[in-house]
Image (tube, rainbow, N blue to C red; front, side, top):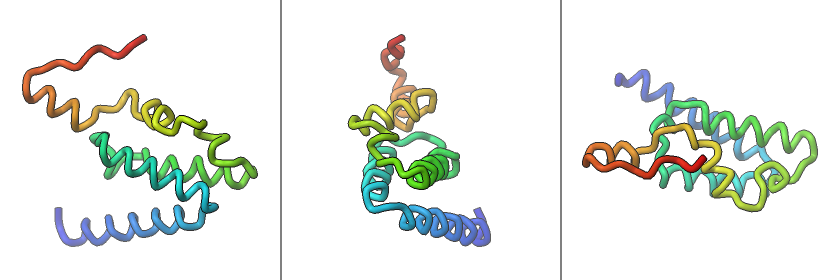
Length: 108
């Protein structure tokens, strides 16, 4: 990765954070908690994937419609997060596979 890509990535991240700061306060709080959760769980494509930008867009639309953030995500924010990444590989899964262990199959 060259210096140009690093600088461009920082510009994109700052623009993303500016969008988050423009959200109503309750949306910002929930967004930050979701972001922390994702950083702990570690979806593989979190850094350059559509997950966080898509979440901000979803929140912007909800705020524009006058909805409270919990109307969008529900009261169990962790369950909302898990549902968003249910089909996404996580670093925990990658690590388990590198150890040769299998995780339990998803419940159907």
